[in-house]
Each structure stands twice: as C-alpha cells, then as structure tokens.
Amino acid sequence: MKKIFIYLPITFALLTASCDKEEFNSDNSIPEYPAANIENLRQSPYPIGAAVNINTLKNNQEYRNTVIKEMSSITGENAMKMNTISKGRKEYSFDDADYLVNFAQENNMRVHGHTLIWYKHTPDWVANFSGSAEDWKTIMKEYIHDVVGRYKGKVASWDVVNEVIDDKGGLRDCVWLKNIGPEYIELAFQYAHEADPDAKLFYNDYGHEYSHTRRYTVNHIADSLAQKGVPIHGIGLQMHTNVNRSENDLRYAVIAAAMSKLMVHVSEFDVAVNPDSKKDVTFTDELASRQKDRYRTVTKAMLNIPESQRFGVTMWGVHDPSSWLSSNPDWALPFNDKFERKPAYDGILQGIYQ
Ligand code: G3I
View 1: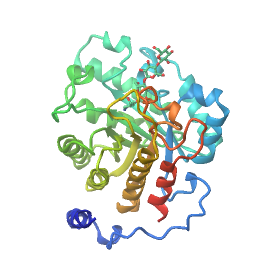
View 2: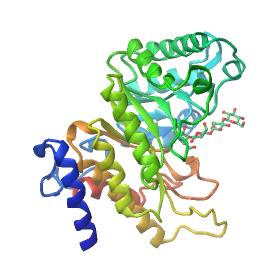
View 3: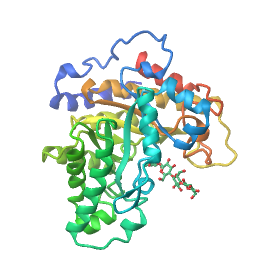
C-alpha cells in the first residue's frame, strides 16, 4: 500500500504543476458524494454508459430494460461505423444509427458516436476509390459532413478518429494516411466541427494502461492537435483490460490523459478474467473480486481528475453474453447472463461513492 501512496503524490506533483490546485483533490481524498443508497448507475456524478448492440436492443427486453435503468450514455457498438452507414459515395444506410439516436432521445441518454474514421471496416467503395489527395479529402469531408450533420444536436460527441497509431508509436497505415497524408487526422476533426460546432470531438485509442509508447504517443498527438488549434476536445481511452493489469497502471492511464487538460473518456471499458483464453476456466469468486477491484479503480480515478475533464466511463457492452469477448470466455462486464449485478457493479459504485 505504501508503494501506491509514494507513487501517487509524484503523479500529482506532475499534474498540479500544470493544473489549478483547486481542481484536484489536494489530499487525494474522494469528494463526499451522496451515501451509497444508490439505485442505479444513472445517479453517478459523471456519465456511466455502455456500448449497445442494436439487434439485441430491439429484441431482448431485459437487455433493453437494463440499459434504460442503468445507463446515462450509450455508444453504438457498430451502428455508427463507416461500413455500417456508408454503402457508396453519398449512399447511406442510417437505420441502425437512427434507431440508436431515437432510443437515446426517448430515454434521456447521451449518445457518443463511434467512429467516423478508422483503419478497419472501410467500405469497399472507399477501399477501391482512386483519385488525388484533394479527391480523397473531398470524400472524407462529404462523409463526415453528411453523418455528423445528420445528427447535429442529437449526438453529443464523436470518436472522430480511432486507433491511428501502431504499437511502435507510428501512424498506422490506412487508406486515409496513404492518400492524404498525416493531415487527414486534423482534417477529420475540422470537418466534424464544421458539421456540428457543438459536438465534443475525441481521438480514441487503446493501450494507455499497458504501453508507455502508446500512452505517450496518443496523449502527445491529442495535445499537439489542441495546441495547434484543431477542434479536439477529448481523449478516448478504450481500456479493454484484464484482471492481471495492475491497478496503478489503470489509475495512471486516466490521470496521464488528464495532463492534456482535454476531456477524458474511458470509452470501451471491460475487464477480462481470462486473458490467456483458457478453455477450462470458470468464473470464480477470486476472479470476480479482482475484476471488481479494477472496475473500482477506474471509476475512482475519474474522480481524481478535474470535474471539467470527466467525460465519463463507458463499458463495452452490457452483460457478459453481449461482450465482444464472450466466446473467449471472459465474463468482462458488470452484469451476468441473467442481467444480475456482479461484484464488478459494486466496484463501480465503490469507486464513486466510498
Ligand atoms: O452484422 C453482420 C452480420 O450481418 C453478419 O452475418 C456477421 C458475419 O459476417 O457479421 C456481422 O457484423 C459483425 C459486427 O461485429 C456485428 O456483430 C462484424 O462481422 C464484426 O467484425 C463486428 O465486430 C465488432 C468489431 O469492433 C469490429 O467492428 C465488434 O462487435 C465490436 O465489439 C468491436 O468493437 C471494437 C471497437 O469498435 C474499437 N475498439 C476495439 C473494439 C473491440 O474490437
């Protein structure tokens, strides 16, 4: 325990050097929030949400009820990806995205748009497009203007670019980098801002909690864009983590991102209990407890950054069977297959309220 406290003041010395002291909890105590007679996550002092699968949202009433009861923010797991929406140049299928936005509006939820530009799942017509750099800028501008413009005032925020660096800290190869060059990143933010000046725009990536190179590079890119006057408002930390990750690493990932003074969104949070993909593993009490500790650590870390920077914590899924990791199996989410609250759920509350 001693090691953790030695570690944290150093971090805070770094942080408070660049930020106003009153914004941080000077004694690193968690602010007193209403006692823990909390009925659901929607009462959290900052948005807690989930990525949702549209088909499951439509067809599974318990899934739907859990989202409505617990989540104050939702992200389309796949509903707003380019390969879902874009069927050709200026040809769109907005059915899933519209359903997500209408559901959110009916249930007073924030919508986070994921994701405008990503190296994965580029539609065939884009992958096969040929033209000058200006032509590529035009098709990217058209797409972003049409999508962000359609949801102006309805989608609060966007992952404008997703996973733009590789594991060596260089820019990841993709059609946009190849045909426009590195400026595709700032142009994507510019186009999104033109389409909806009020939307909060994020650079979303992964590895902050386990890779110094990835953490440093992501934070540096975001900070550099902001310093250059690019309309970037936040950093998304995907945080697909597991029970073997040290809690200090998780905590520092959140705090380091806040040094940029941009908003911080833990955007795809899940805690896998079977990171080695063993087939004979069972979800033991010990694994549940380690998972709970990590949920608590991250929701508590969000309270250790300035309130103005707490965009929220979004889990990547609702209940274990709906997780992208379910086949592993990993039991990575706060609700089990019967939509019952797991110890991880209590960990979320303890991180915020104790
Ligand atoms: O909808 C089609 C269906 O019609 C078809 O029959 C089926 C088989 O081909 O595929 C279905 O689409 C799948 C889609 O999920 C919806 O289930 C895609 O193949 C599959 O690739 C896609 O996987 C998603 C993955 O991103 C790739 O887009 C996962 O659900 C989603 O959880 C995962 O999320 C990503 C984030 O966007 C970015 N960060 C990492 C995270 C985990 O990989």
